[in-house]
Image (cartoon, rainbow, N blue to C red; front, side, top):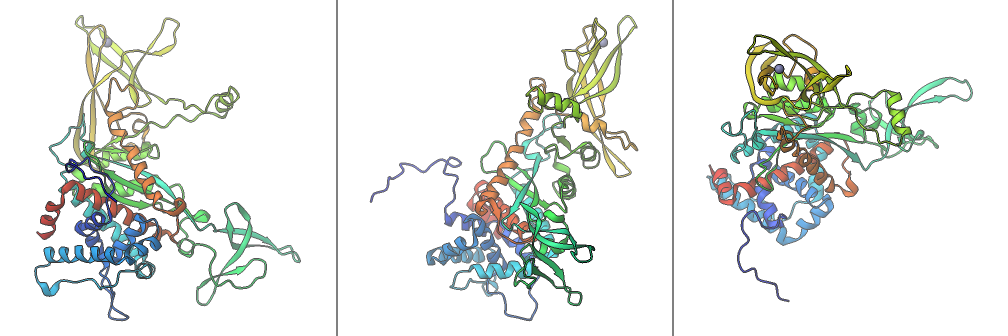
Length: 540
Ligand SMILES: [Zn+2]
């Protein structure tokens, strides 16, 4: 068989986006991420057998399980002797480059790491609450360092009126569904003889939430949770549902699915440049905004905190969050305006007319702005916010309030440090109005006043509004990146068989996501920074 010979090496950046196994191993071993994550895992105590593989290699297996879409497939790949030799070879090269004293270098066993090594590490210590917490913190700290090495978050780039792509962060939440179908649910049980009603905890299937498959009991003495078959009453050998989620009691009865939130940045001018900066999971149902705010708090306090210019997110963030992003963190939210709530009658009327449930734009009166003309008279303009955009309203000849076709045009965006009671920043935006009598401009504060709980302005006004992109193209340029966080989530879910997590428990699901994003960051970092620079950085 002959293979076509390429006449010349493909230009950098235009090569195939898929890494081969050797390149993937290089990325995982030469990026600092797995090594730094490994350092966050406490050393093993004196009891028991010593760990056979370095933690970074154990974590590498977890990442490869995502790459190959299952731990079994990762094991099959590494069972191939040449694949394991690639890992050992890169590991030795890495040790020689980074560990000066030969006596301190660790070499890998000749037998490849197997599924059971990974499973043991994951189930015995990696899913521990404290360790997961540490791993997530370390992931953020190291990913930020890597982003800085790539030149992201450069204070010289961009301005508040035209933020740089590498100084904006974007995020999204996604629900990861579990392959395990049973949920825990409180069920009312009526005693047929006495008529007495009691509440029992049952394992149920989501499609039949009223049928108990098994009863979940807790041993009063040992605290052990066990299951009884609902028909026979016999004790089952295994729990038919997720023990950890049940015990954490965090996710209510629908604990089988978990919502993951991530924040990223990238360089819009380069492919494969996305760096994931933070990963979190909702504490309970419908708390995505809280998770996002928690991650933002963490990023704001990190070395890139002062360099971030804007935060791109979806409508899960509302006025109360946007006000905080502006005044506490000092970032510009790039978020669509949520539609005004429709009344039931409006919804019914639309449905009856066969129209889709079209959203009603939000309107907020912002008072009037006036300017003095040359003859000393005062000219007044009525300002409203519609869909995030500042507009002028005026009375027409029939006495109805209508929007004036010309729009106030955004000019400067200013941010002033203002440390007072948890509020660090004040913003003002200059708008120019092309009044036919004489053009004038005014300043507007796009958030609540100090000491005010009112978040209606942050809810209704956007520094970069979605509409009228001919007037203001910033929204489209920046918000387009939100699709990329959706892409990253769907890429992650592609690594789960049938797009469902086969890992039990909240922490296990979080660990899978963490290692997937660690692998993606490692690949993109190596692609962007280049091989020789990575060796230089790691050796220093
Ligand atoms: Zn005027």
